[in-house]
Length: 106
Image (tube, rainbow, N blue to C red; front, top):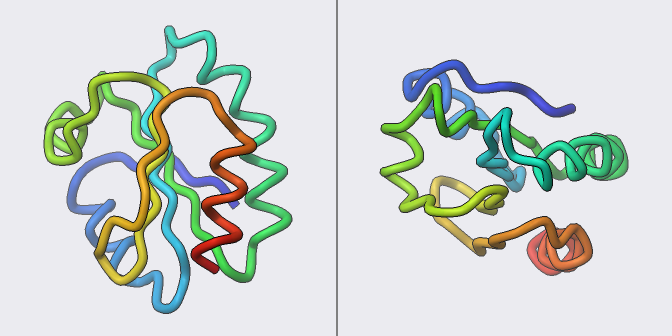
Protein backbone atom coordinates (compact mmCIF):
# COMPACT_ATOMS: atom_id res chain seq x y z
CA UNK A 1 0.00 0.00 0.00
CA UNK A 2 1.16 3.51 -0.81
CA UNK A 3 0.26 6.21 1.72
CA UNK A 4 0.53 9.98 1.52
CA UNK A 5 2.31 11.59 4.49
CA UNK A 6 0.70 14.78 5.81
CA UNK A 7 3.51 16.08 8.03
CA UNK A 8 6.74 15.29 9.85
CA UNK A 9 4.97 13.93 12.95
CA UNK A 10 3.07 11.40 10.83
CA UNK A 11 6.25 10.45 8.96
CA UNK A 12 8.14 9.84 12.21
CA UNK A 13 5.26 7.75 13.57
CA UNK A 14 5.03 5.61 10.43
CA UNK A 15 8.79 5.05 10.24
CA UNK A 16 8.93 3.96 13.88
CA UNK A 17 5.95 1.61 13.40
CA UNK A 18 7.53 -0.15 10.40
CA UNK A 19 9.23 -2.88 12.41
CA UNK A 20 11.33 -5.16 10.19
CA UNK A 21 9.97 -3.50 7.03
CA UNK A 22 11.77 -1.46 4.44
CA UNK A 23 10.31 2.04 4.32
CA UNK A 24 10.47 3.73 0.93
CA UNK A 25 9.98 7.48 0.91
CA UNK A 26 8.79 8.72 -2.47
CA UNK A 27 9.58 12.42 -2.67
CA UNK A 28 7.36 13.90 -5.39
CA UNK A 29 5.64 17.06 -6.59
CA UNK A 30 2.23 17.36 -8.25
CA UNK A 31 3.79 19.27 -11.16
CA UNK A 32 6.50 16.62 -11.75
CA UNK A 33 5.88 14.65 -14.96
CA UNK A 34 8.22 11.74 -14.16
CA UNK A 35 6.60 11.45 -10.72
CA UNK A 36 3.22 10.94 -12.38
CA UNK A 37 4.68 8.22 -14.63
CA UNK A 38 6.18 6.41 -11.60
CA UNK A 39 3.01 6.45 -9.49
CA UNK A 40 1.22 3.44 -11.04
CA UNK A 41 4.46 1.43 -11.11
CA UNK A 42 5.02 2.25 -7.45
CA UNK A 43 1.53 0.93 -6.65
CA UNK A 44 2.41 -2.36 -8.38
CA UNK A 45 5.64 -2.66 -6.37
CA UNK A 46 3.72 -1.88 -3.18
CA UNK A 47 1.34 -4.76 -3.90
CA UNK A 48 4.15 -7.17 -4.84
CA UNK A 49 6.21 -6.39 -1.74
CA UNK A 50 3.40 -5.67 0.74
CA UNK A 51 4.79 -8.05 3.38
CA UNK A 52 8.24 -6.44 3.31
CA UNK A 53 7.77 -2.80 2.33
CA UNK A 54 5.90 0.32 3.41
CA UNK A 55 5.81 3.07 0.78
CA UNK A 56 5.20 6.64 1.92
CA UNK A 57 4.71 9.50 -0.51
CA UNK A 58 6.03 12.90 0.57
CA UNK A 59 4.87 15.96 -1.37
CA UNK A 60 7.91 18.25 -1.33
CA UNK A 61 5.82 21.39 -1.84
CA UNK A 62 3.65 20.64 1.20
CA UNK A 63 6.48 19.20 3.35
CA UNK A 64 9.52 21.34 2.68
CA UNK A 65 10.90 20.55 6.14
CA UNK A 66 10.98 16.81 5.42
CA UNK A 67 12.53 17.39 2.00
CA UNK A 68 15.23 19.53 3.62
CA UNK A 69 15.90 16.88 6.29
CA UNK A 70 16.64 14.37 3.51
CA UNK A 71 18.48 16.88 1.25
CA UNK A 72 16.03 16.38 -1.61
CA UNK A 73 16.93 18.43 -4.67
CA UNK A 74 15.30 16.44 -7.51
CA UNK A 75 12.04 14.63 -8.03
CA UNK A 76 11.30 11.89 -7.91
CA UNK A 77 13.73 10.74 -5.25
CA UNK A 78 13.27 7.44 -3.44
CA UNK A 79 14.86 6.93 -0.03
CA UNK A 80 14.98 3.37 1.30
CA UNK A 81 15.16 3.03 5.08
CA UNK A 82 15.08 0.30 7.68
CA UNK A 83 14.78 0.88 11.41
CA UNK A 84 15.33 4.61 10.88
CA UNK A 85 18.57 4.23 8.91
CA UNK A 86 18.92 5.23 5.25
CA UNK A 87 19.93 2.22 3.14
CA UNK A 88 19.87 3.75 -0.34
CA UNK A 89 18.78 6.83 -2.27
CA UNK A 90 17.63 6.69 -5.88
CA UNK A 91 17.30 9.95 -7.76
CA UNK A 92 15.12 9.98 -10.85
CA UNK A 93 12.37 7.82 -12.31
CA UNK A 94 14.46 4.65 -12.49
CA UNK A 95 11.99 2.01 -11.31
CA UNK A 96 14.31 -0.87 -12.26
CA UNK A 97 17.00 0.52 -9.99
CA UNK A 98 14.44 0.97 -7.21
CA UNK A 99 13.27 -2.64 -7.55
CA UNK A 100 16.87 -3.93 -7.49
CA UNK A 101 17.55 -1.94 -4.34
CA UNK A 102 14.38 -3.28 -2.75
CA UNK A 103 15.41 -6.84 -3.59
CA UNK A 104 18.88 -6.22 -2.19
CA UNK A 105 17.65 -4.93 1.18
CA UNK A 106 14.73 -7.29 1.83
